[in-house]
Length: 154
Image (cartoon, rainbow, N blue to C red; front, side, top):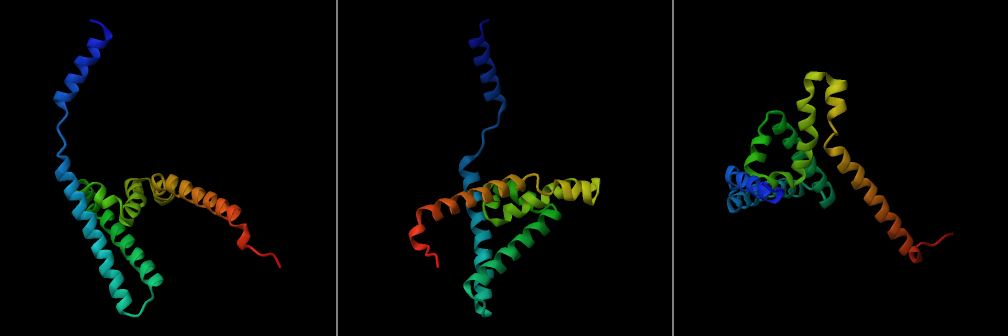
């Protein structure tokens, strides 16, 4: 047997054993769950505006509440079940970021608060924060360089 034939046989075996993913169903579930999370956020935002908060404050309060709900549901292992059902629909909104911080902390809580929760909390979210902050700094520098005409020195 040559290598090409062995690779083809292996690929046929993998294709036979791998279950087919119901792509349309998964997309639909991601769409409606992600939409539901966004609707909940919009309801919170509208309620804040109704209570007299401005747009910026309403957005901050909405983000804080959604992050808190997500962290709480992650702690109860409910958010992970939602994530398995909805896939990216639960990960894309801000709730997914909260889950990515709380999940490692919950996983390593048996190792203690310092070496477990504290050390492992940002294992997933850390690179996102580092590259996000780095990219924003670079964009800010580029913006500053190309918009120096609007800066006046006194």
